[in-house]
Image 1 (cartoon, rainbow, N blue to C red):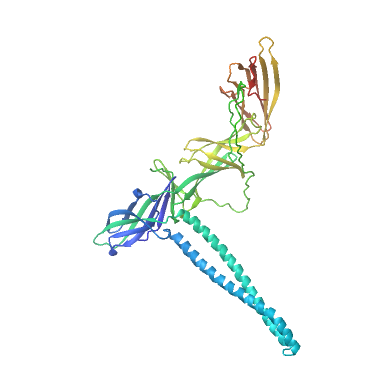
Image 2: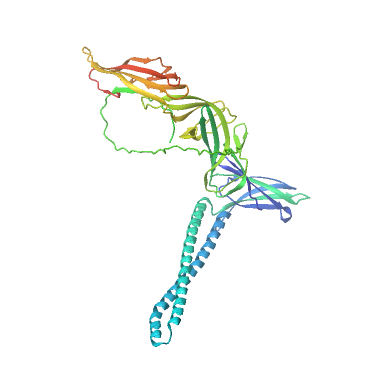
Length: 512
């Protein structure tokens, strides 16, 4: 029975395939569906149907073939055979024309002396010699043109054959030599006639993962989600009903964070060991959308069905995905959210202010973790990764550096002295960070700084002073200020500290 694929449900790690076909029970009490993937899960096979019959049994079998089991691959192999035959025919024509050119060239060379003798003896006049010469030259020119055209045609045909060979090689990597089959036992009823049988089974080698486009315009955030489907099941999925389910049956943009700043006693250097250096290049530049005067085309989103523990997305139109596809993109949904914008700067690392958007998932569905491309207005900021995002949960999005927020960090005081009585050495430092808002709107800037933390009793950090009072401090010497700056306004924070080092101790980890 011919039972084509009519529906596919893709899960994060496999897919359920549904086939449907019709048969007439007058021919017997069994129907057989062949050409199925060898790797299908026999325990997952389910058969239902409609018609005047009872299902008495379902058997899964396996078949060995001399050639590929995949009909699509067989069609490609047959196409290659026909293409090779056509190339051989053109090659024969080219060889014949080459022989003709060689013959005419030889005749032309030998005729020169004969024409000279004929003219000298008066056997042939100049007119006759000219006629024969022109006829011979015309035939040779025509043969050369034909051979050149055949050579060019043969070259193009061989290029097409090489492309076909690559398609076959790629398809062969996904296809099995053998296949599975399902035999359905049926018991006809009194009025038995044509019945419809539906077969479903689970296959590995298929998956989907989410991806996101995040666009921020002022305080409006649009999150467009899409599914990236990959399938290497060995069978092509034609245009059919596609569903993506979250069920599980059986160059990064980041906000700067401070690491603790430790002071410690200098330890003897360990023996040198070979080291390997690794470097990663991040794509640069920005992607700018082309402005058009026409109305923008709107995407079509999938229908979402929420069950108890999973969401299933059903695209609005049939989708075809051939075997070997990697990252086939299908748009799923869009969320329109409102963000709270703010800035974060850690001038001890870099004097740059990072724009950050805090967004709450106001949708009905949980978004799976996945990579996201972030755009600020029409500018491409970079890529980040969204963690699992549940409804009502808050998420922070890094939107890159905003040069309109200027940050400067200056060392305003530095001393180094030695206590005369105890022999202790003392170091003092004071830093001032200035933040200026050059944007046209009010900006809330979070400033991060840190004081050193001692890990040795002979090293003491004293007199730590922060102005103004920070909104948050930690035991690891981290300080957080939150400045609210009007357009054109400037805010300043200072941090000062003193470090006492015992006599005879060499200090490591100090930086200025």
